[in-house]
Length: 247
Image: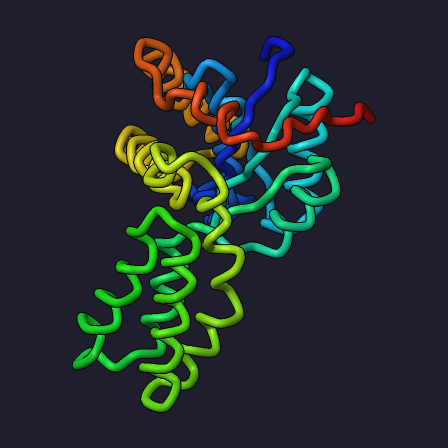
């Protein structure tokens, strides 16, 4: 990875079956950190295998990227995970964190009966479709008023996470659709799973990491042919451009 700025990072993990002695276990594949550079192109920056999803693994992952030249990160998009959040705030000075809206909606709907799920889902999606923060917050207040009596647990989850799920609204409107979810990473993971299905169970971590990295880097090469985001709008928005300290 050459030394340059990546204003946006996407970070998540998936699982592959790996043989461990006489047994088979699921090993967390930190497959991915994907960065969007200052010109708006995507790039796979890291694919690593770790035994757990503990915070230390994510901290080590980010420190390694910083040592290789990562800088200028303004926003990290991921699923809700305390280890990721802690690593982001400790290692990426000045960066903000965006919780994936799709995973957030699923967390809320898990506490809604099937008979009302479509109704609640529609009102949730409406919040994340608007571009103005003031409008989104008004819809959020309305959601709380509407459902606090009927589905208190769902509303409790909503209230606890809505702030960190609206972070993307501070960025250019043309970027919102691609900043509010980890869908791009999910598609990459799906391709990794599809391509590794013929293997079944990997004999060890190294073989899993090698093939997953090869697949991810091939996707990265294809991404280089097409700009993902127009970054001029980010500069026009006046968002701070943090410079990361080196360890």
